[in-house]
Length: 468
Length: 105
Ligand code: HEM
Image (tube, rainbow over all chains, first blue to last red; front, side, top):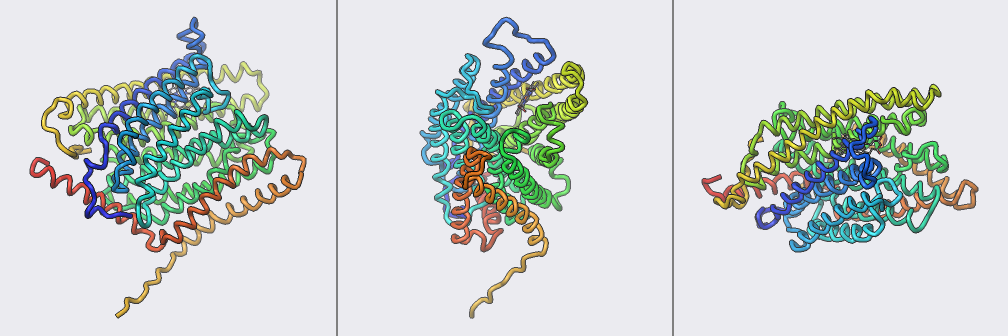
């Protein structure tokens, strides 16, 4: 690990403008995705707001919903975060600042073309890999450039690396490989159940090898800084990292239990999922251990509150996984809204909460001014976390009712009848979450308006005005 | 005068957690590997099962090499050192920024 004694200053390391642009883009895609989610949710209540337009049919909106979240919101948020964290940790700037600007523009083109392609009906027939086939090579090259841009300062680090850098280095390689595996192998190389098995690996690896390492890497950086103390145990952090590296890639097939994929592969996925549960436990213990003796810091400090809420949701989703991976439970909940509840809990409750918390912390630093309204940030927290609790709880419960209805061999329509109230509650909770993000985006806009960077007042090299 | 080497005792719970993580995983992996051998030897269950396993083996082989490299680089000698160092670097960066702002900060 390098020392900062004779190293460059923050302003030479971090391209703050780019970090802010990434955050703004991420929030824009979050809003688009939520509109799409609401349209899809209304369709399930038999109220399609756009009935006459085939291009805007709910099936297409659903794909816009998931793709805008994964590649628009999460990827942009993570890229912004990498621009802040990697140079500060490695004490070196990214490979090339011009390349960074190019990647920003190229990534927005990839995401926007994906949305347009999906609406025009050009989706690739692979869950989470719906990106039209003609965009795949562009996205792949983009990921390679990202790996070079951030990988360079990381591999230049001499001596033992901090766990965050391990996570990021791995994520850069994994994301590139996972994208290639999922988008090209089933499309061009294998078919039938083999393609299904690879698809299983892909959908899970996308969460586990792209989103998870970037998310945890980010937590290992921000939590100690906000708590003003190092992690409780760096050794335990490394157990988490290497555990993820070895066990995660095996478990994707747990999405396809009871399918024609050979049973030994399914049991292998179950076993590695169980192994990973232990690894997750070590990570959670470490973060709870780091809190020891800090009083109520994780409640009184707003960004930390987002982070620890996300960590709690992470624990809950992993607890769910422990149930879901058993064959008995899987028979009940497969294809039900339990899974949709689980997906929202992990994507919004964990990774989005972390990213939003990071934005709450970094935006005042980037814009050199306090938030326009701190109160609105608190409102945002409560409406996001509260809305998500209701939405996830509602869908998880609804999923159980659907599963029991099918298990009792009731007619299909019965299970729809059972689901309607749950779907209605989902829309209400979704509306609250949507309102929260609108408020957040407006707060960001107003903060930007009063920023000295925009008004041309005194420009400070780097300031830490945030009291939160 | 030479400084005596301090041998740190590994706490018992580290062994317990290590065993709890490693034993089921090694068993799972061995079981899977055995099945792979059977499939490779021509079991009728379908050679297509080889695709995800080979993917996995390739990915983890890379990580195994990386782990070995990290070991040889001494990444696990003083295991908490990178954490302390990172924290110190952050403090230094913040301090120098505050200094550059002068009394305005
Ligand atoms: C306004 C709030 C939202 C509403 C109303 C909403 C609604 C929906 C609907 C109706 C579906 C399709 C479910 C089905 O096919 O049965 C869905 C899927 C999904 N949504 Fe949302 N959503 C919202 C926000 C979000 C957010 C913020 C995220 C992520 C950060 C997210 C992530 C997902 C994911 C990952 C899926 C796929 C689930 C699966 O296939 O199992 N949603 N959402």
